[in-house]
Image: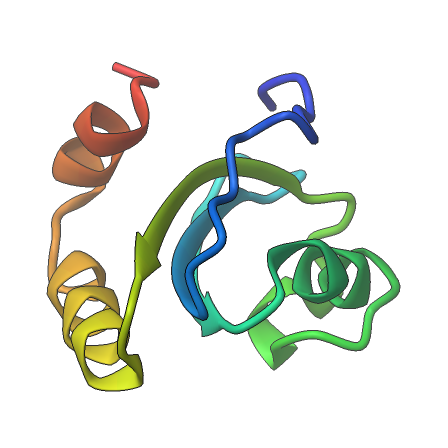
Length: 93
């Protein structure tokens, strides 16, 4: 697992797509309006069902958006990526 880095830049945008690296090495993609809160929820086992048994998680990528629809479209796009494409996106390759 990569070193957790809470210094992943987060802008003043209202909507975000983020990628987490889970303790088992898998990557999780999600949408939120508050990245820090959402990562804390995942780590506390209160996030998505997928991440509950895979903590701790590390935030490895964040993309800001001005609209929810743009963020949700990007989240869907990233979820269609292969593992290799996701690794390239977050710089894990």
